[in-house]
Image 1: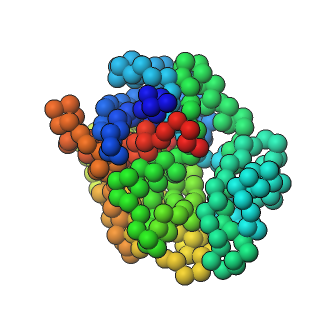
Image 2: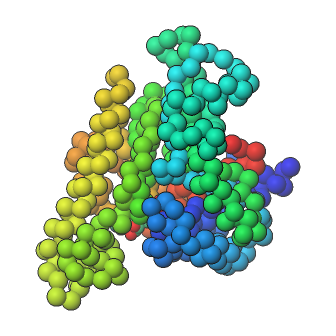
Image 3: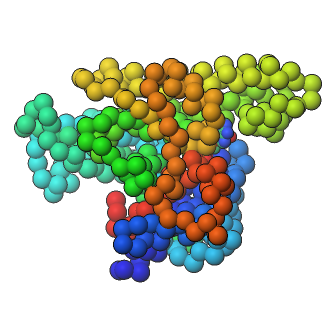
Length: 352
Ligand SMILES: Nc1ncnc2c1ncn2[C@@H]1O[C@H](COP(=O)(O)OP(=O)(O)OP(=O)(O)O)[C@@H](O)[C@H]1O
Ligand SMILES: [Mg+2]
């Protein structure tokens, strides 16, 4: 059991890249063993649907080979519109009681046929407003969606022993590196390529989650569409290249600023929705993960619009690193993209 606990690797299949993290734990501290990233063609995963599983299987196998990873046990995660996360209130009952009634209780909260979903839950604790009730985090994921991932790992010869949700993996990573502060209300915002996920935490409790079906791709797409440049050029422009033939740098800045404003507005809408539905809690700070959090413009636009600080998260903050093996500057630059994979790599066999 001891060996198998250690023998787990975190694999995040993002829409823009596969990311792998392997950690070693000793006396409660994680040590970075290895990381790897392999970009995926934009047609590989479209709108949360795996279009080309062979390309993903190849990427995973190539990465594991290059990283010299032998273990077959994997922690991975899913996200998107096939996954429903809801905080619900139910009469106080034991874990076992809820286990036997969850299908029935969950039915009204799930927009899919209950027979089509895998259901999981976690009892958060008593409801502050009504002592006869308790708060429960309900998670439902469409079976055929999860099956796509399971069969992909089977094809790669791997065993997914932990099937997590992206935002829970980010919370896990955040807890280890930053820690939760009692009653402090913060939002973790994962700014990915095709999606943005918002999760609000009060202390160590997740109180609100929302997926926004847009992300960093939007910035490139806008540049491409409005300037009539190629996808590659748009990607370069997005990352700051202002030397693209026949394009006025000022118009690039303007288009980028517009697109960032749209993205930031979506985030604000989510947080406004949280404020409107929670009685008194207000988010006091946002922590940013995902590749788009590398953009200073995005960070500044968020701070300005939300009127609260926005900090870029370092997923390796409390992970010990051998600087002879890993260049700290490189780790810092790519860090935000590894937030989900790092949280996954901290999972243990037997975790939900
Ligand atoms: N400096 C930067 N400025 C703007 N965007 C950036 C920057 N660096 C990386 N990105 C963008 O971040 C995205 C990749 O981030 P990440 O790895 O978190 O996404 P993903 O996990 O593959 O996507 P998703 O979670 O949406 O499926 C890409 O769209 C990339 O262009
Ligand atoms: Mg991602």
